[in-house]
Image (cartoon, rainbow, N blue to C red; front, side):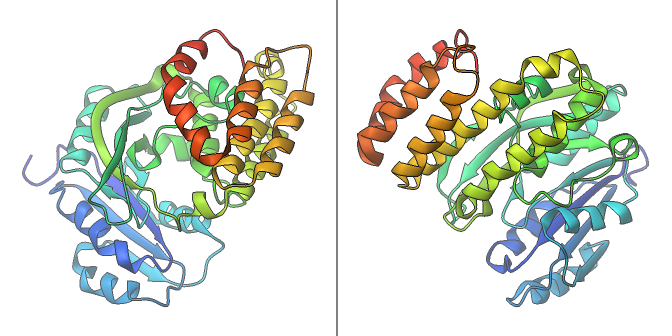
Length: 326
């Protein structure tokens, strides 16, 4: 046990580009796991801040690191995965960090459940300082059909781990995706293996950061376009099943509703209303428009009062979600 021989090797890849303000905490969260059979790589995209200095400082703890131009985050992660040799695979972004004992907990689940191909757990979300807890998110069910129909539903990314068989059987991340690659990849895993081979744990495995300069916050328009690009691929596949055909309209409606909500939060009221209109036009007589009407209410109320309305009726909307389709 002490030499790591009884523990499956875990390969962690951190993609990074000019994230020096967070990178050291990320590295230390991996090194301080004290996991006995660890492979840790950092694939840097040619940073011009202090990232290289930090990687050199910790290079004795790193299996591999490199700093060179790449084609984006997905490409960087794939580079690391292709060099990896572990039985369990994951990626940890350079502004996120693991909770103590996360790797041992995940390895134990995999070791005790050989049929499981994916383990996912809870995550804390912090602000830019890493000290203020914004909220804790429990793991999603990650049913691929629900993730498609609802245009979401993926567990917080750094709290997801999978076996190497996933890479062997479905391949790597789509390098053309820069915002929704974790969502798309988990859909592919679920469609291929079935969610019966997923295992949830309530344990908080990671700490995610939400701050103004994250890609998700600065690129929300591109994020929604990527959702629909994924749908275009899924719904034009030659092996599309009747169940996928049933949720085609719901998926595109959900993508426009999500775009409307993101536009509303960023103060783009006209763009938000236009996105709701596009959602309403998709199968207008085939669904309950309650979700679109709710969004219109929030948009017209403005950002300040919209958030107050949202918070006040959130318990009600959670219950209605069980009865109103996408």
